[in-house]
Image 1 (cartoon, helix red, strand yellow):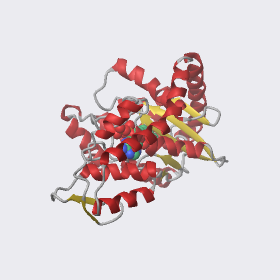
Image 2 (tube, rainbow, N blue to C red):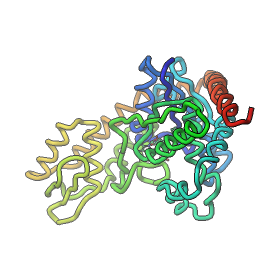
Image 3 (cartoon, rainbow, N blue to C red):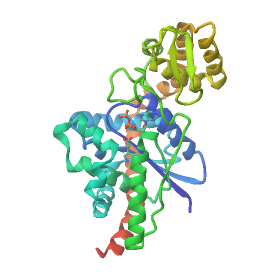
Length: 340
Ligand code: ADP
Ligand code: TRP
């Protein structure tokens, strides 16, 4: 039997470059590997764990699927579906909540962040977010999960739940691992933290045109272009001659690394410590390379928008196939739990 893969994205808006490089690229690499059977969903149920608008949700859950298809997820190779259309996920999540402690969930960094963001919405659904995510993955006994590094704590919970269930009930859940991509952490354009839909000014949308990309990249807060660098490598700190540390320069260098290569980054770092960098030129070239990566996506997106019946059919078939696969797991679990 083929090994399984599952991933999902919440339906909170269109995909951005961070989602694409951190998650969708990994999804594509695995769908093209014949060793794997790939399940990719839009996590519409996770979307309702924080305040949302029903009209927006209806729209966004379709946007994510259009984005998936335009980016290159292939319905001939992957099962593409909507989480809420597969009720087995919520059923399994409830079973999983019986081995998940409140204390553990309250201490997760993702939970704390959301509570800080929405103090009036510290709900049971939010607390149960990781158990539902574990159910998404384990309903298919998926072993690999292509997601960005920020999702690692959730995967740790999924592994713990799998272990507990196997011990207590004799199930055979795998302990799912994260499938990493080179873009597992895309920085925010503001220079602070990661690129995220919920932070205005932090992201590049996959649908942005060249002008928009240029103006967003131009706004990355860089320094004078000359100074010292320490230490070399991942968490490099750039201190300009004025003595100010510029996180924006670090973010720009990460983008240079991803889109122009490690050699170009080293070349620029040498310039930073000697003659100085002219950011204008670098930013322009970088914007063009980012746009080149997205141009194919944008053409495909328009084609798909003009063909709603085709998209409906993919979703309908995907939902059916996912339900059939998840039902097998649920039956086994219920039997072992004494519910059948
Ligand atoms: P956002 O934080 O923008 O709301 P999501 O939480 O919906 O994004 O994430 C969807 C997927 O994209 C997840 O797999 C997540 O790990 C990945 N991802 C999100 N932001 C980034 C980023 N800046 N760099 C790499 N991967 C990311
Ligand atoms: N929590 C993920 C995010 O914020 C979305 C998600 C829900 C997911 N269920 C999943 C990702 C299962 C991978 C596997 O991006």
